Amino acid sequence: MPIRTARLSLPGLALCAANAFAAPAQVEQRSDVSLALANQLLDATLAACHADGRSAVAAVVDRSGNLVAVQRDDNVGPHNTLAAQRKAYTALSTKTATRLLAERARTNPEAANLNTLDELLLLGGGVPLQVGGEVIGAIGVAGAGGAAIDEACAIKAIAQLLPQTH
Image (cartoon, rainbow, N blue to C red):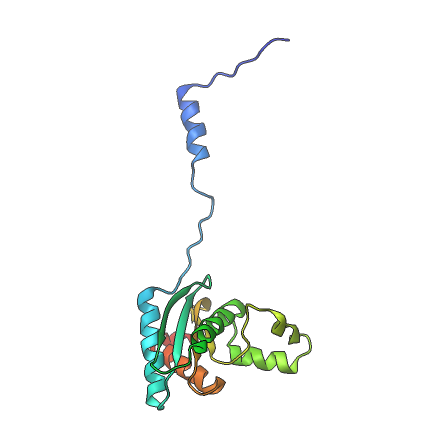
């Protein structure tokens, strides 16, 4: 049985190597929450809570659900820090404000199973962050005195900094 060998010219070899290391055909470019934006949102959120005589903790996650920043007022219960982060994660993951999601889970039998997912926290106070119709992250607020108050602090901050989204 004869042995066959392949011969490649130097330009042919270079072309094969170039194709092996070429960039993917499509590279996604997506908007995301920066640390600077997260801190501005947190400052504005806590200022909104303070304007109503409330203290709270607020957290911002990026489009992948990673914590970007968190701020906590003095004397806010430690459980609220985790709650704020989980509210933000839930709002991001479902692309829905968590107060609305909680209401749906209570009133719609088909959505009731959302309560069984440990990753989600179905308490109001989580709001998705949208730019150009695209969810780029979310903010979660806890400890301000209830779901509606938590959510209102976040919405005031979002309206101030991302007015085209609401």
